Every structure is written in structure tokens, then in C-alpha cells.
Image (cartoon, rainbow, N blue to C red; front, side):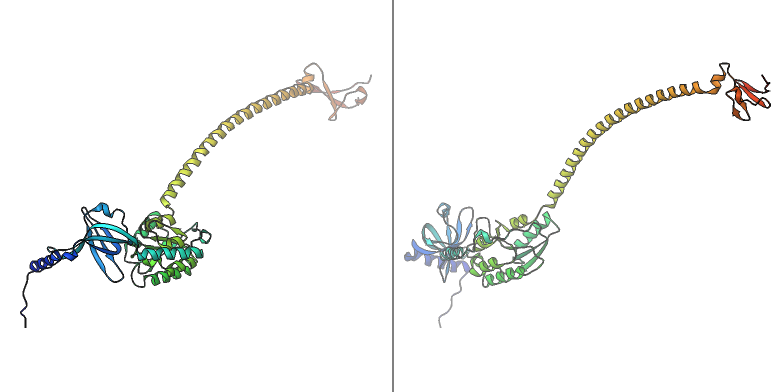
Length: 371
């Protein structure tokens, strides 16, 4: 039995590195694969290449040659394998990249898009309008991700009265599309939900694959409620974006599109009240001036009316004074009454009886004599 050697980690890693470095057939080789998982650092770009069975971690120290490469591209990468002894990490170091047609995922995306577009699933005539009043929003996404928190934060910052109902689903991986379909169908028949958001964060074309499936597209198309797609970042496009009634560039943007800012509404209401108040002040000032003018005019007319009536009264009093018996008696005339009846003619006087003679300053009782 062969005796096993005991090696330190450093010794073992250096042996592996020497093996890679000594194998000439592995230097400057070309590898074909689909790009995914691109991430940038200060001095390098990390990504992976894959085919149907395996994946290969890669690094490129020439950032400019990665400028035209994106997730899902099929490329031919020229480089050499390298094993970093210090970290025990393997990478394929890329020094040249050439395009190799479209990646399989992207090809499938284009084929599905073309198929559904021909069937009319993207036709604007089928798009449902967003409700004028939204009291409850249904959200199809993961309960553990940042997406649902972003939607809640934005919604409740703008309007605390809006309710949010979550249907928890996977957003990638095996059977994710089936869970997403169930979430859409659940809210399609949920009576108290006004609109539905289907959302997840950004990711590679592979990460977003569930939202490029025919099942999710048809469930979105058949939903009885308006659907807003908020999948990935602003630059990410998925099949559900074309089928949904409204596309939002991000989940936060979806929440903002569906809620009215109550603070803004309150400020606008205050501005309207202030504007109406100023208008009323102007109207009141105008009416006050008009009322003052009317009051002065009425006073002038009333004064004239009173003076006219006073003058008429003075004339009538003067006329009445002329008719006053006492005034007549003061001129030397006298009034004769017999048995409380005035006597104006001698023939009316009964000489056998006494009678009264009234003067201005008193009366006497007298008796007549026959003539």
C-alpha cells in the first residue's frame, strides 16, 4: 500500500498551479459559451461562461474589451486557465473576446416574443387602464426580498391609506414560473384588489427566465385585474413587460405610479384654499365699496324724501291753522252755540232760550231779545 503524503495547503495549491502553468495545450485556447453573472471591480471584470452542462468562472483585466458584452451573449473567449495559489481559486483569464451569435436564452426569448406578439398578446387594445382610485394593491413576489419592502415603503410614504396584499412566490429557479402563475390567478379573482404588481429585482437573463415563460405571459394576459410588471432594472425587458397593462422600470417606480401623494394633495388643497380666500377678499372689498356707495345714495334719497315730506307737512299745518276756529276768533269774531249746536243764522236762534257766545279768550251765556 502506497504511503500518503501530508502536504500543507500552500504546498498543494502551488503544485496545482504548476500543473496548469506547465501544460502548454491549455495556454491561449478558445472557449465558446454563454455569458452570465457579470460583475465589475476597480481593475477587472468577473463573469462566467456556460453551456448546457457546465459553467466556467472567468476574469478579464482589460475592461475595454468587455464594454460590448452583456448577459446572455454567446462569445468565443481566448485565454489561459489560472489557479491562484494564495486563495485556492480557479479562473479562466480572458485576454480576447469575439461574439459567437446569440446565447440560447436570448434566442428563446426572441422566439417567444415573436410568437406571442403574432397572437396579439402585446396589442394595446387589450391593455386595461389603471383605476382612478386604488385602495388595495396585490403584489406577486418573494416575501424575503427587498422588493416587497421597497414597494411598501414607497406606497405608505405617499399614501398610508393604501393596503398591500402579498402573494409569496419564488422569483427564480425551479418551478418559479408556476408559483408566479398561481399568484396572478389568485389576485385575478380576489374581489378587494384593485391592481396587481408582479415584481422582482434585477438580475441576469437566466435570473429573469421565469418572467420570459409562456405560462406567465398567458396568465398575465388572462388576468381580470390590471397588471403592472416591475421586473428587474430599467434596462431589463422580459416577456411579461410586453403583455402587462403597464410596465414600471423598477418595483419602487410601480408603487409610485399607482399611488397619489397625499402630502402633495394636501399642499395643493391648501394652495386652492388660499387662492379662493384671496379671491373672496377681493370680491368682498368690491362689494363693500359698492355697498358703501349704495348706502350713501340711499341716505341722500332718504334725506330728500324726508325734506319733501316735512315741507308738505308744514304747508298742511299752515292750511290747518288757517281753518282753526281759535285763530278765527282771535280776529274779533265770535262763535255762538245753543244747546251744544252751532248757530250760524239769526233765524236758527231761539230767542226764548239762552245761548253761549265763544270768544278767543272765553265764553258768556246770553239770552236774546225780540226784534
